[in-house]
Image (cartoon, rainbow, N blue to C red; front, top):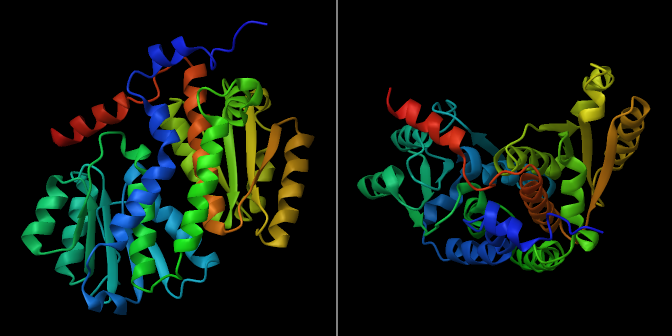
Length: 356
């Protein structure tokens, strides 16, 4: 039997000269480092009085806000978490709002604008960045900032965009104490990385096998509750790592519209592959909806599978599922014959916007 392209060392030398696979495998260590750094960040005592959390972030730097928002309901947060992906803040942002501004480069124009508006509104602001204009704004306005070093893609800095938010909110008492859950999640991620790393053969590597099933198809990733933003993360990772279209859907909302389109256009059906993320703590009625959705997809000829996400805690389930999607999308990129790391189209768009 010929060697799998995903098992050949030459594939990685040729298509991953920037070493993205190593950063995906090292995500557990990054999560721990970011958590510890954020827990050590000194914040004004008044920040404990916040009655609302707003996260500012775009793209890979913004995914942490979506994951926090998804987790907040199910882990018992006693306040609303909102995510702003744009230039304009909601009118309710004010002196009792904790605003967490995340931008890996520090130069994301939407976040620079919205942080300025938040500071003008007197919000309790915290900046998370490697520097840039956000770092300068934090110094000029006297805003607390966690400045970190990261030589890699914003999307591969998930520890810095997610664990930091969780640590800050947990440390302020705005979320339950998540330290034990975080440590357990990191252990589960390390075990996953050992089973899905580049040196594990495709025959024994669940991430490589999943990538094989998705390659050449349009992935439809379905999540619910805290796994809904994980499905979105998978979609964006397929976009950036595999340079391919993907769709993210959320249950139960999906059941109220999408099934009417499952069978059309018929020419598309052979090119779809649905992945439904399921976990043990999912609402029992949603688990039932997973079964019904699978039946409807299969009835019209759409290839579909369930990924059962392990983990004793919801945080462990979320971070494990994120890392699995990172690995699978990376391997999908290799099967597509593309270099996963560069984002040429995004760089072009940033240059286009900066020139105008």
